[in-house]
Image (cartoon, rainbow, N blue to C red; front, side, top):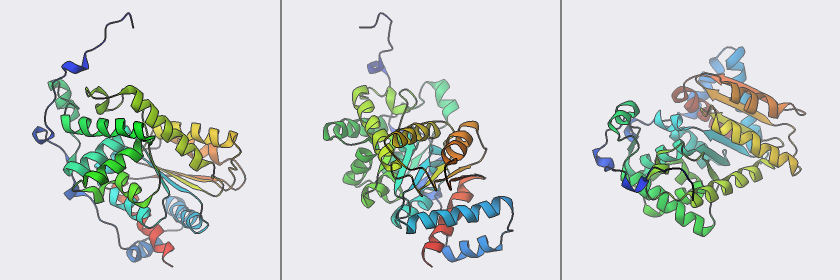
Amino acid sequence: MSRYREADLSRLSTTSVSERSTRVSVADFGRPVDPAAARALLAALPDQLAAKSLREVVARTVAAHRAGRPVVAMFGGHVIKVGASPALIALVDAGVVTHLATNGAGAIHDTEIARMGRTSEDVEANLHAGTFGMVDETGDFMNAAMAEGARRGEGLGECWGRAIEEERAPHRDASLLASAWRKGIPATVHVAIGTDTIHHHPRCDGAALGETTLRDFRIFAATLAEARGAVVLNFGSAVLMPEVFLKALSVARNLGADLSQLTTVNFDQIQHYRPRLNVVERPTRGEGGKGYSLTGHHEIMLPLFSAAVLADTQR
């Protein structure tokens, strides 16, 4: 037993999600763009700088898909909060994206959208009121599913996607985790303990959390074992996913993975240090590898990219 005093999480006061105001509704989500319109828009752009890079990224993604190579989409919670999930789901449903990977925030927002149709609270106001992250339903559902997933030997994203589907959550068609479960592809969730609101929920089991997210790390590394000719896309995660990706790629390389012809792309509103080094530059220095940085708002760039890829796959 530790000699230091601990906070007693069993004494936390939780509230119902029905009493919490939110900033994002599933009604605000975008819809997949007509691929023909995306093709025409991309063709009209100048053959310079970012427009040229975007065309190359689309072409490399389509080539990886046609060659049966992995296309991995990593994303943070902001992608869901700006309503861009349908664009990624379209790529999953089409069989283009073969692995989804996210952090805890991404999984929480995705689950709340699936179950309640809304998410994203006012952090500053609720922090000072002592109510930030204190809704009962989200923590109760996700922690119960996580404990069951640990018993079943599942990964964290796998058990949450299954639970959303089995519950027949009313908005499960807008859920990335559920879409991966339906398609039978990995959706891995990579967490740092204490970073997510469900970790301070009284039902959180640290052993189950650690077991399921570590299993997801191994699943991620197994996908990257097929890195030759693969495409890895990072949408909006500036810290956690770039770090997890680099370590999982190191495991894959140690076990014999060929990193040649690897394409990596960082899509974000601002280009940060870790994605630049850990996603764009370091992994692609092998033969034929290439990394790209594309800067822009997710709610614009992701639907455009998705539709452009789907347009080329239909040719």
